[in-house]
Image 1 (cartoon, rainbow, N blue to C red):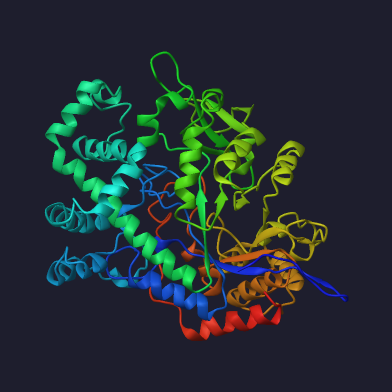
Image 2: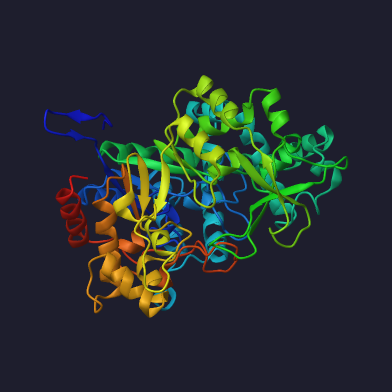
Length: 518
């Protein structure tokens, strides 16, 4: 698929694409969570039938407390819970009876991931498969090559996960034995001796993930669909990254974090968002040519076709909050690496296929950074209605679809927004009337109808990319919201499809895309 411009004497046409946002955990299936198996391949079939050329997912890393993909246990590893038991059966590493006993059913029809239950069900299965693989095939060339190629993160990650199990998921910088948290060589050697099988398990899990992911990606790409990945700007405080490379973060003489990340108060939260991720020591990163970032992006590019950088503004300036503060209100803006980082990345990796998440308050300098790098920014349709006053809509608002230019990435909403139908229901009556009027809908239009009117408005815009959460195509309400920023509830990140969307929905969306040549 080419992004080339087509010209003729009468007009200039620039290609525009549509995509669906659905994280892999939200796929249906019998094991309590979406995975890389049959349903993922079926969803690719749905996207093909719907005329979609982009599938956007969230970060692929293994999640920790809170289950957020943006607070992964590793910036390099894949989420083991996404490994398909059915594929392991196909490969002779699990038996049908073992897998069928582990199948979960929807309790009372609720379509949510119970992460705790899923871990209890899937990890014993994965360990059985890993131990059998260790006997049958741990010496195969594919596994050996994978371990060698990824050793720069895989060795530390495997030890980290074994210690997480040993210390019952307690944080490495507060509870672990000091010799291990400080990574003393003798302590690490002892772990490798005493936990040889367990360390190998986690390496095999990652090999399972890699094989299954590459199989899925090849299938998706064969249908002319590109995968949009996602990368958080920061690494998690409780991660193999911070444990193995504490030198890359700002710390005091005792090795304690001195500052953490977040954003100041905005339209998502009146007290800001306290992410808690340690902030980078950019001077140290620059001194070695940003090698950690080069490795990180290289790994991501082996998994996806394009990628969205979460909180792009942080590369220009980032909100630095003294460690220990209860909210994100009291911080300072500090300079990020700017264009220097991306020049180093492109020197090593070539032109980067980046979409920049540039939401929030933007300064002239971050706009210049994005423009200088040529990265498309984001527009979220819901935000175009945020400044309605006294029954008047600001038609100049840059987030309204008629104002989108090329190249931008336009959304009805993101994983952090309410669904379009839920958003509409939550509005004041006079605001609903105004939104319906803009979207050319009657006041009696259902919330689901409003969602489709918003989809149509974004599809018809001039934005290069138009991407929609699967919940909006289904017309679902607030019960299907994926995440509420600055909260930590069991509903966050847990919504799932009850079943695969049908051919009727695919045709409806495909017809809309054809109507607007997207």
